[in-house]
Length: 600
Image (cartoon, rainbow, N blue to C red):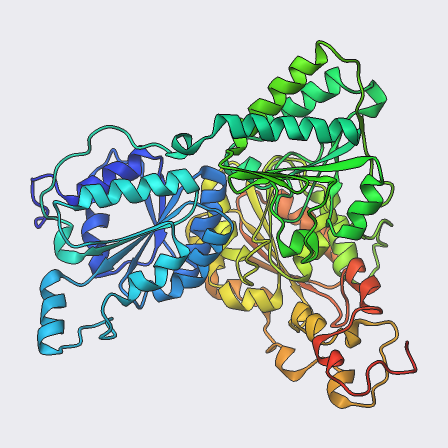
């Protein structure tokens, strides 16, 4: 690399900061505007950073997101506009779900920028609109910096990374190509989170005291373990709190348990004796669960649509500690970091145990809040969502991480018992279809001793199927199960669930009686894609075939598999089937013949 100068430069500086904060993997698609940074990393044989190419930018973005969820931080490299534009969706998902990803976007040189402005020359990958890339990423990052000056670069890099470490959300660097190898100062000191600078200790104590008083006034409690426990590495501290309560404030047969939701599934291993279930917490379900004398204590839990059925669940019986604040009933305590709140709760309950006898008891789920099939499937059964996931629950192991896509797969997977902590990954708030397949790549990179087990619908698989090629190229043993029913099932359900009713309503309307044409998928021979992308392809449609393939997968721990799971078009998870009869689709509400007398 003869064009690499000896002076310490901006590329060296960013590399050093990336290494310092623990970046060990970079995903992306190479372009000449970022080549100087990549060359600098490759030139250092001692650098811990591995550069992995991807089939496209979207696959890179989702892989980086999943990697950062498990490892704490990741980095992406792309080139200006044509590469960066593809990442708007993936970075938005990382922003919404609080995942620290660094997007490094190489930009045209300062000289090219000036010529473009003065002469009107449109260079490659430019639109003519000033700084269009950074303007698009500012709303979905916690810091966005355009680096055009080597003297300012260290300050811009440090401030953005500090913001990312503090808020656990993405940041964006746009670096002019001619700045990478321009000399600059070396890093001074170490970067760290700025969260401690905003802690209000008195507010954390006040929030904890209010929580204690609520729990004593409503002594039947159940905890909701939220996603921030994983994001901030507080799982063990959460269990310490429960241990403090269960040792000092409850009788042995009245231990306080916890639930999770789709977004936080497996933040604590689901084999834990205090785990009660993965649930959907709508107001009706909460009322049935806690009764008059109970309280729901959400620790790091977000009230996202998938977790709460799009309902506002705050009440006099709820505590919700997340996003840097705590709601105890109607009272809000701002600027309270979750870790300090947990510390204050542990301290107050420890002090209380010295002067009071046990007064608390734990609530139990008397019925599942998410309906799943409970009977073991017959080996000759035609495959469907329920018997597939029932079998998956028996097959998944502690050495696997299950990665599930949005839609029916995410709904069906809630009943699968995950035996390991952080053993389930899903984009359960942003809900971008296609996330899971490249996320499986990132999961395997983050946990090389685990095996990624991806479950995706065929519609979502069409979006990012190229990630299978990445998995094979990386030498991974990832397994992708594609549930193939030939339609965008969840989209059909939201607009018109009639095809999933038993029996369907008879509208005598070709549109309303059938799956809509735009929800029909082109027919792919999915299991044959491995002929081009690499790996082992299999196709199953009956339970005996699925079980045989699962055995084959276990007998080949080094191979990546793509399994096409063929199910009937109208098959849906049990919870959807039971709701379909009373659900009203968006198109049905607008239909003058709704509700039809024959059904309701």
